[in-house]
Length: 438
Image (cartoon, rainbow, N blue to C red; front, side, top):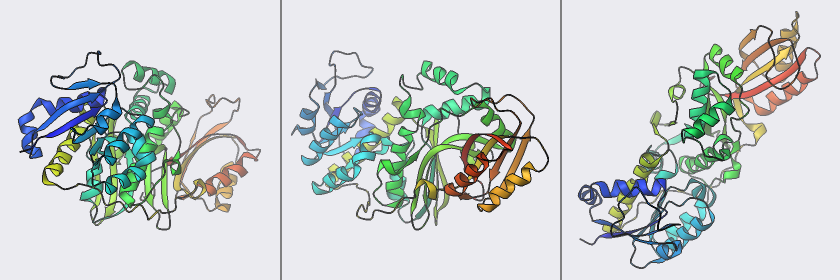
């Protein structure tokens, strides 16, 4: 039985985790793959750097492209991250007819269409289970297990850093900046956390999920994105009073004539399964027909979870190589569906404002909303206290949650309200999920 020879490009956290998973029980892995696997070469930045994995028999180099084009290598594992060199490596390997396993979400989100075409052209596999959800198996279920279904929506908590911070804010009432520093100290957030806390990471992952769920080409820039850095403890506490928790949600919906793609902080009803997903855990909730509702849950990042997903792809691709076939995913990228603009987004909304505390104000505000076709689902008025939104406004604090409406309708309503002498400040506006049967 001919062994499958593997070359790694990158041996950082994920690469070392994948290699450790492959080599822990090689005989068991070989039985599952149907053929022996052997890692023969790896490209790294510093060959002298100590690594937490046995590299016996693995030749180290600093030349990533040499690994990708080595005629003695059957399968290339790209776990270096980034886009520039990683794109060159993956493209070179595919052009050489080599199958590729990657966990690079940004690469797949930005250049997936091009790379899938190369894989098809040269009869190679391109596997990317580790790109979304860490150890949660979600790419294979969407790409294979649910292909007989019409997917209506995919809603996910798919960034562990932001979920850790929001979970901690909910428990402690402490501000974002303080809990970001705590997450960094514990290794849950990068020194530069922008990709995580401003929603870029989740947007890359949602792009990939939408491609698979709706079988269409999606560009990362089509995903509307907001982060969590402006979220205040006051909003977390008020959401709890109304029966909600805040989560950074990645939402992909099929609206029939268009797709809706967005990443933003959302209020989720406490009774919804996604509300109980805390700390660094991820979850992906799918509604499809005929299967109904399904949810995938697990650890969303780290050496072991993501390394497990990468190792699983390696085994699956090696099995295909042994059988002379391909795994592939049924992606019809010639069918590019329109994506909703921001004004066309449909949701329910949470609005917190400061108002003059006198009779008739609520009726005035309800009239403005009614003029724009917006109705109120819940309302809460609290006592006078200091405003936390950076202005000197006073007055009673009013919070309301709407029924479903469009982004344009809520923005137009708020624009009118800002001109009323009974409205001192509109403090924050957030979308909700799970209201009106989401």
